[in-house]
Length: 618
Image (cartoon, rainbow, N blue to C red):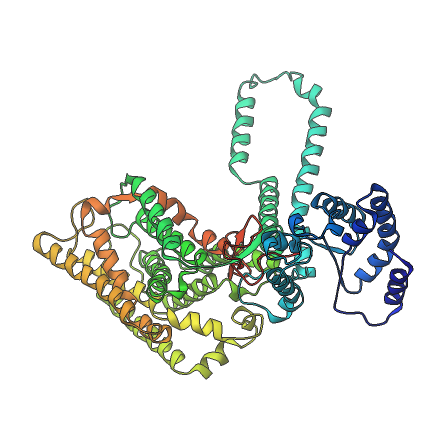
């Protein structure tokens, strides 16, 4: 490397403004001039080392890339270039990587992969062909443009998001817990070691109660073990810190590649078939017989959550019928919220503020931690804000006087006034929701009001995402509460019997109701194929979401044999459905749910095209 290169770098160091991107690289001319001698390679290393300091300083002010040399097609080379072999190029590339390691110079290795994939396109065996130049240019453009264009997908070649002080403080708080726990354990071990002699020395008893003292000590120790200690609390927070660290590595670093989603019928239906085959294989009997008992609702939440996960990973939202069926699943979660909590309150359970806070903590703890760790607004995890809001609405509706709960003793029955009060409250709630929906200005004034504005707006201070999610399922909670009230009325007046493993209804009536339920499901599915656009389907959905949900409940519960069996496979996932719904955003999906994680770097496809905007990064 001659004096002109030194002058160039000296000029760049003194320059006040630098180019946005500088691409450098050399090797072929040195190999050709020296006929591939080892002396030239050593001189190449020395010259590059002398320049590395200046390159390091320039790399602090702009992007400086060192382009590794592309492989050559030796059979196409001119005779005077015969010394330029791939073995020689590998030696020079290794030398550059060794010298520039640890500096601010970024090594551009993907260009070599591109050239290797299209080496036959080279005209003279040395210079890159048209296809390689095209994709090299695309990669360089993406390297600069992707940070500014903000692609709504899993496009790579963009800079990682800067870590905020909130994220650092959160990680510091979580990571300090296992350190404190280790310090406490070491201290306890030292204390035990120090007093081991005293503990082994027998203590005489003057009143003959030596046999009762160990029993009392054991009882106290057993009672103490049953209660969670501060060590258990620190251990739990330490585990949470490790989990959050894994989430951060997956979706906020370049440890894993990110791919765009590409839908195909096979990719969607094949894993769906696997999941339901496993769910049907792991079925068990249950001792519960009531309609929508706990095992059944866990099963329902479980298979819905797995379907939603497959839906998100395969990008199936572009298919309107699939999209509308997934909308029903989300509505079913809101429906179950209304049904489950209304049933809890109706049966005379706790309706106090402590119970409300416990439920809200259970719903929001993981999401709040993720908001802090991943630097995302609360609305990014839209499902939890949606459920939290509707649970709050239901709680306020039911605790306002007059109370509608029946007496808690076993043989009590709800009075007709309880049903009347419930219907009045339902009508009032439905009217309020309708008014809120008809006036978007009124809606915005309520939800952009401080101090809760931050709970309903996105990063761009926009309320429309919350408006869209809210209005899609605005009546689903009410459907669940009405269904629960209707169920309690039917059981109280002995119109249905779910106290045993028999059918809910007898004879032909059961067949007729099951047939109607089947018509409900088929009708909704037919509607999703008839509907032409998403806005039209979304407009209809809030009014008809109860149809397939009710049909499924009837078919799943009408026959006693089906009602007393459940899938333990789906039920297991149902018990962690909330966590699974939230965690999928970062450990299966990527790029803020617009892409998916990939363990390996992508390469050119057989037709020479990239499967995404920038499949190979620097």
